[in-house]
Image (tube, rainbow, N blue to C red; front, side):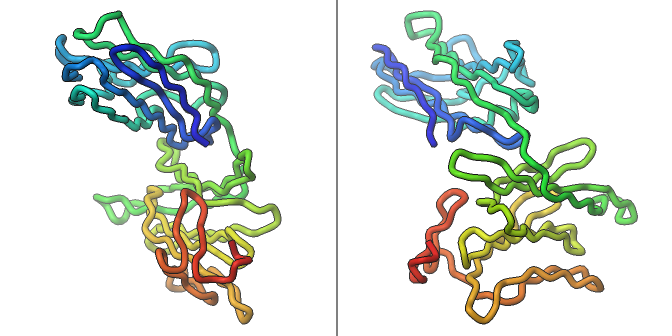
Length: 283
């Protein structure tokens, strides 16, 4: 769901939009700032006094202004906007502001430029919610030190369910005592349907979830949560895809099922799949 608002003035149009209203704690919170230059002149944004600036304003659940990690943070730094041009900036705001607390945050933006009349162009505040999910499973594994192969660092991941308006989803959180490396949405979660997961000998994290009655997704992530592999399987009447870990070799493999080809058998739409050239009842 897109949550947006757009302000209109003679010189510029501007607004903020969010891809959702509710976020799981530690996942990326993306805000899009869009501006239309109706001033009739080119606008340059940067660090000097003749350039324009954009400030993102974040207010925490206790109604306190959250300072940016970098006091000089200007998302529009280096942007040049020609007369009549429209541009959008996508910003992961919790990379620049502390937003790990649970609760409701209010976010707005304030744009200034010395060639534009008025002190600032401000958007209304928009409220978003940072919430906790339910931990379904947790596993701790070792990661080899990059400089000393004899040194092993403990790391963990959690399989988490998170309630959305359209239904629960499955998430993966990768972390240690110091950092949260990734918080990723994997797909829909169905109560009573097992989420398969394991770690191989190279500290890759494997997950397999059932997203439709006969459709499964096998994903492989690095020890920092970056995606390395995404494979879709369809269960046949003869067998269902099963994740198996070889305890001696430490490898994780999928047995059974039929691999589907992206673009030919399915397309990805966000966290969902639309199947093609397959049984209509699978969609």
